[in-house]
Length: 318
Image (cartoon, rainbow, N blue to C red; front, side, top):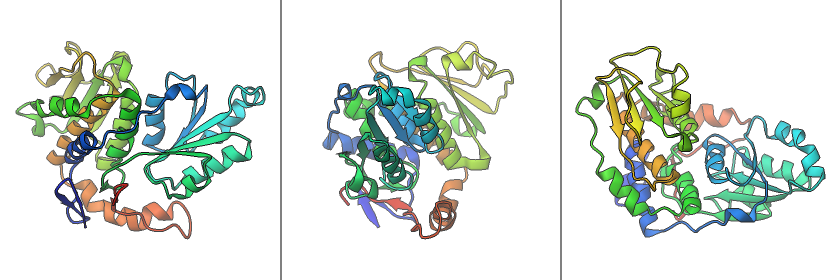
C-alpha cells in the first residue's frame, strides 16, 4: 500500500482519474518540475509509446521534430535516411514514463544507427536509463497503471512553465452540469491549438472503458467535418474555450470557459479531470479488470519472461 498526498492507494483502493489529477497538481505545487530547454534539440527524432508519443507531439511540436511510435519508429527512421546521412537529424529523444517496455529497444535502435539518445522518464534506474546517452528524470506520484497523469503532466509543465496552482484553481471552480452523470456518452471539442490532447483522451477512453467506449474528442477544425451528423440526447458535447452553436443536441451542450493564457498542461489537467468524473459516473470497468490485465494479459503480450506490471505504479520517490 502506498500513501500519496494523504490518500492510501492500493489495488483495493484505486482512485478515479480526477482524484489523481488533483493529487498530481498538489504534488507539482510542492515539487515544481524542472524547466527543459527545448531549443537544445534541433530537428530531433522523438519516439514514444502510447501517450508518451502524444506528450512528445505537445512538447516538441515547435522543433521540426520527426515523430515515431512503437509501431512505426523504424520505418520513420528509414524514410528520413537522407536527412540522417546529411547530419540534419542527429538526436533521438525517447519519452517513456517507466523507461521499460518498448523504450530500451527504441534507444538501442537509435544507438545502432549512430544517433545521440536522450531519455525523458520518471525512472532513473530503468533499463532504458542505463543505456541512454543522457537521461532527464522527472518526479511523479504513485498512481494506477496506465493513468500516467503525473508522469506526462510533469514533462509538459516543464516545457510550458505553467503554474500548477492556477490550474488547480481553475479546476476547483469547474461546475459540472446537473445532469452530467445521466449521459451515456461524452464528446470533447477543443481549440485547434490544443488538438494534440485529443489522441490522449482517445487513449484514456480505451484504457478506462474499452468496449464500453464512452468518449470522443476532436479539435474545432476536425469537429466541423461531419463528426456530429447524428445527434443524441444521451451524449453531452463539451466545448472547451468557445460557445458551441453547432455540435450535438442543443439541450445537451456544456461550454467550458478557460483563461486566455492557458497552455497544454492546463488543458491536459482539465480534460483528464472531466474524464475522471465520467469514470466515476460509470460502472468500475477499469477497477474490475486492471489486476488481471497487469498480472496476465499485459505482460504476456511483451513475451515470455516479462514480469507482471504493478497495479499501482510507485512514484519516483517511493
